Length: 239
Image 1 (tube, rainbow, N blue to C red):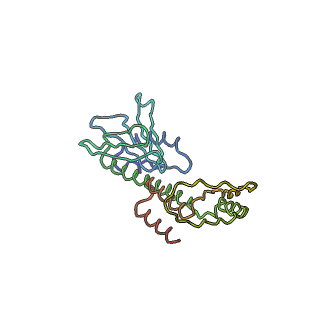
Image 2: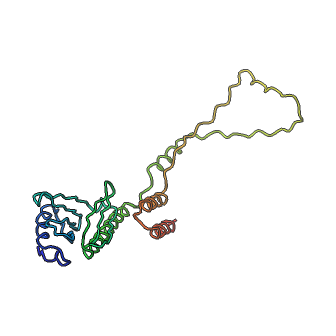
Image 3: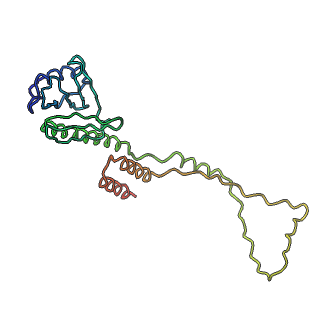
């Protein structure tokens, strides 16, 4: 690996060599180092802190115990909510904002290196969101008729036909004392109750399911307002 490509913005080549030696042992298949930013304090610092960016993760490194130990905080892009940096008199303060846990910052990063860190991390987070969105969209497919609908047809076809019910003719009478209903003649069987029709809950149709899925993607901020409105129109146009 060409060490000099990571020292083009004023990074200490000796620190670069030490970092690459340590980080290379932690890289996964297909993972490569993209950029390294090294702290530069006004006073001489033998072992400065640093931030290493790969195509999959971010490594925040702190040398301790005179270089005999190294503390790493490592985040995958799925663990990072955002990146921020603040330019100060002596360099910039770069802050990594994870979804859980405390924010982690390294100060005295040269301004040129801090700006490139910001660009790399923002681009990596955007690419990760696009990949996640594409995976979510692949799950929206047109499913066959719901099995519940077939069951409904079978249940309805096996139901006995209810006897027709004749509505009584309304009789208008003048106000009079309440008349008790006449009891049924002896030996007359009471009328059989009408059969109870089971109520079967229907599932949402395909269009409704797709609209709900799009709303879920929009609520998770995986798609923009414009993308949500466009996809919704496409789904509704198929009606």
